[in-house]
Length: 351
Image 1 (cartoon, rainbow, N blue to C red):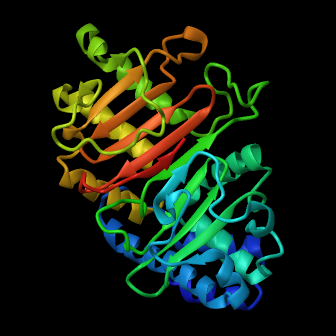
Image 2: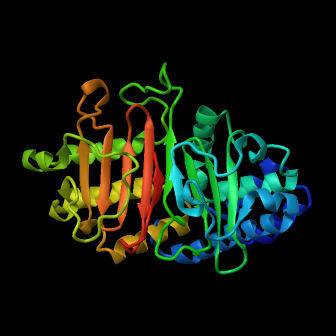
Image 3: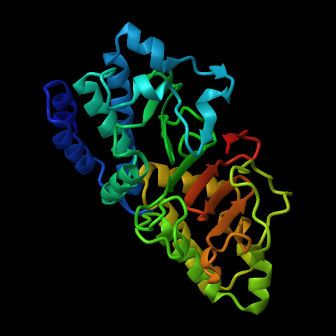
């Protein structure tokens, strides 16, 4: 992270957006999920990302703060706005306050873009740009932001939203949760003739390989295990509240899988986490460990929305006492994520 100071000073020196984002990506290069040096890198990475939130906040004038900055516990008709998540929404006015528009000056646009891409594994930046192009006409077109609390203190959070997008940066202000709270990602790929109704195999969908990895695990199950794992009716996609340790989790218990099947389940989790920065992946690992790891979770596949009726399950779910990763692949990909170390954490989700 030796070039972090030059990156930060470059914001105010007028460094081009593309150069700044590329340099920031280098500064937060990904490490393994939990491995040697991973926590050190995660701490440096989080400092870089969270410092950008503070610099952005300090650069805002009074008019801008009045539109995009809120008290920590701000509520509106959506409930506690800081924790809200949906598949297609604007946390602030999409017409006037989109991150690529004139409401923000160029230096602020640079900071927002670098901050946004700093939340992802650099190896995923091109795929995230493709998703944004297919779903929203590109980065900066339909995305909006809000800042809650006061960056630089122990209680603040940055949230960016849009179509198929809810992502957060919180400096660990939100206790007990990963990602700063529930997140959402998705993609309606133009690789199918009708992007809204994707074909079987989901050509061009950047997130479909996650489902391929999960379906490969289904193929490893024996007949009895498949009967346990396959459920007829899928729950509402935004049903991501926690059931706790006594909840009736659908599907098959990962604890009951064989050693090689468990190993593949870990690979599924790794694939799910791969798009994100190291510090967020580490937080997920800590939250999972606190609730008993993957062994405390179940894996379920759903047969009611099988595109092409090919037995490659488009809808599937990993769920634990305080862990939900719901993948809905029909008619296109929607993924709802809610991870905490305590099932008492409340969720504010809307489909």
